[in-house]
Image (cartoon, rainbow, N blue to C red):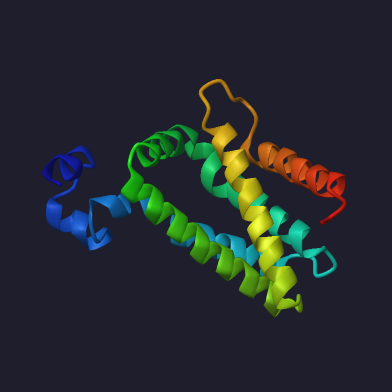
Length: 163
């Protein structure tokens, strides 16, 4: 903890005023991300289908919160990939975000089952996009990769006849 605080130019006390523990540094952006996505869903076009509403919100959040932080987010991704305990925490935070997105869709008038399916599908597409975005030679934006992942999802679903 001392080394982390020193590298950040903080005292340990200041560090703990902002984070519960050193692992929380890796998840500090989670609440801001959730707020951004939920706000975008609530403020978005009510005529958009649920999946499109979520994908639009994820794209806006990606542009605002991640694109300028690509190197740091990529390093964070590598740390998570190397630590099963942190992976579990990331999965838990993603599950909470999926539930919150489903609730936001439900508040827009979407039935609960469709809301949960749209939220889950969008989150899976986002994870696929994120995996590609953190690759060393990848130059496309996270937003572009998200669009590609959703298109692949739509193709996969249509090829299986929706069953």
